[in-house]
Image (cartoon, rainbow, N blue to C red; front, side, top):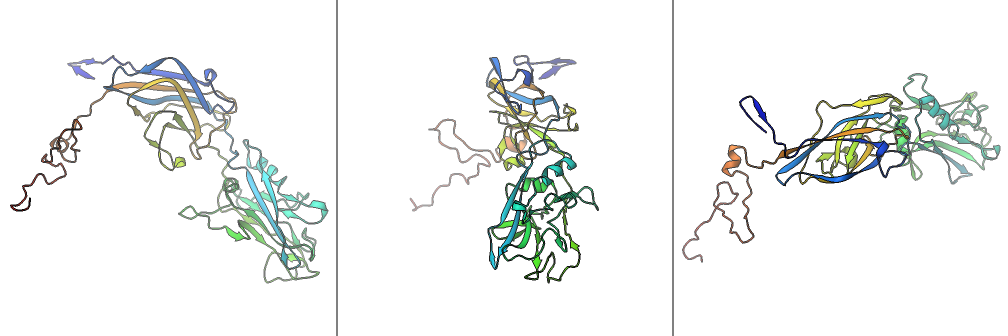
Length: 390
């Protein structure tokens, strides 16, 4: 682009293009609407190799229909350990699975508490809280800080659920297992504390597991259980609990990662270990759950795409926090892509570059002899050998 006087001159060999893509006309997409393809009727390309395309997301319109509980953060495993006589028995494990969806904290706790304990055969208790007793649930909102979660084992002491010592079933502890399956929901509930290296610091080993929870103690035959050591015979009903150190996080995705397949965008996402990828925009979610978001960036990221040649669009939408595909739950969305073309100029601009500083010395043809005497070529140039050294 150049100008003469006050009249602006434009190159119209490659006009700017605007592509408006609605999932209502998308092909090859399922009900999640997170991976959608649009087929074009003709190929769009630059007029010649001296032009490159510059692409950016001009706007996006969508509803926040995203679950805050997904397959990545919907599981807890509760470990109950005990001995038979002096021999550790195979521990009992309860797996809590919350159906994916959008929850407030009360509905989430209802789902967790309905699965977090059991009393098989009406004899021994497993899990967190007291089975079939709403007075002592496994998980509650903290009474001290309502932004945090408190969890508790079964009651002990006089009249407690753990009852008295039984040589066939001596309780030793109740724990939450921390592993790749449960990390997501434990983090959502704010139960795990991490150091600056992102390593958990309040997790401890129990048998072959990494856990968070409670040890149980007894004084031997005919005694009741307590949660402290050295054991002292309790005279009342005993409860104990632990409160998460972090706040509950039920906000759902913070932003959407928009990828355009087969387009090298020179972008790097933390969920991809910062390797170069094809993300063309990160779209913040500013509307509450169920509300519409209209995103029109004031300073869009522009992707330079040499050798531009397309006949279809495939747009993939992910959670920018985790890299998971999101689920629009059947709510259609629309994205507008702007494509502009600019003539390529690869000439060296700075004075040092034009002088040859840090420039590669390469032949034009395979049989061209290198000139190692160019200024700043990185070599010491040709030197005549001393007499007698041939």
